[in-house]
Length: 216
Image (cartoon, rainbow, N blue to C red; front, side, top):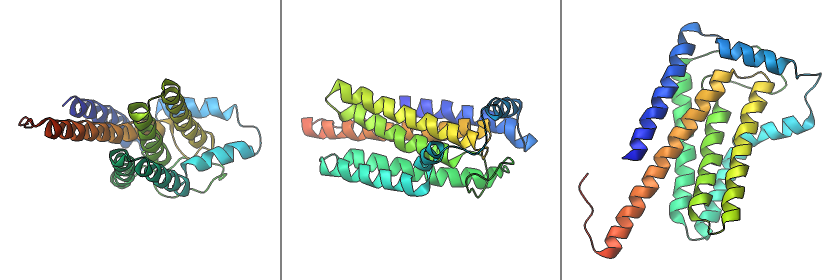
């Protein structure tokens, strides 16, 4: 039940951003300030490193990492983890498409350093990236026995998620509020997956102990 409460909180925060963004159909004050700060950092063409890091959020990269991670979890006899990874990513992809179509926010003007299509809000890279790398960090933290591996997984996941958001802002293909909403959308999917894992494992433990699950 705690997971449902957290999902409700996340949905409310997303709604607050959407209420600010939708009427204006343009940059909010936060978006303009972020664009001005990043504009001071742009000097000529973007580096190859930034372009490469941006590819971590591409459809091919996200799909590849999700499938490889799920396959690794399955091979390690953790089918629940494999299902959680794939389910979280698929949920984020579907939810992102629905929200983008429903809200229809145009993208900001940008230099064309990267190819983009579709609407801007919420950011697909941020949302699906948060869902994938966030659920991977959660699964590693939950199932890994090594404390060092847990910390490394959490740090790596957080770093990739932040890098994806920064790259989309740097290239000017999203507003700051697009990224924030994308992160919230991804976190919503992760929270749902975490709740499913907990409920599944509780029922499994009850079956093994011979006790009956409590009625909801």
